[in-house]
Length: 147
Image (cartoon, rainbow, N blue to C red):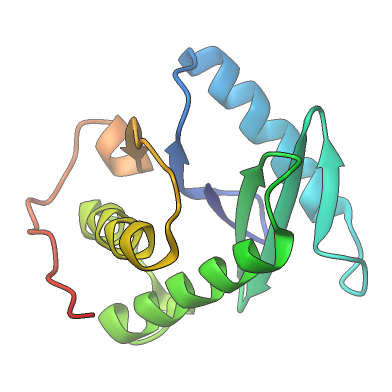
């Protein structure tokens, strides 16, 4: 999952497969360029390599997920929408989201909740923000969510 601005600045990234930093940067650059090059009226689904890319723009942020070919695009869009709603509740407005360790923790909490309620299979390996990958993390705690 990638969260990036209209200018292409990466705000949050979550990887479910182990990749080198070089490969992550290459994939991120390619996906951001591909999504930003698309017109607003175009479909939010596209095929990329052996995956399907599902993305949605909210305010000035793009939320982008890569899913396998047999996965449902509409469910993925719903998951993105619910994550944005959760960000709105937690931060006040998803357009003002400050990418901190709390945003990453919120993604983890949301992921735990969707796994149990939607039956999703996910084995998270890493959540990275520009601040956490640089070693700057402002020690916030993981928020509690009620079902």
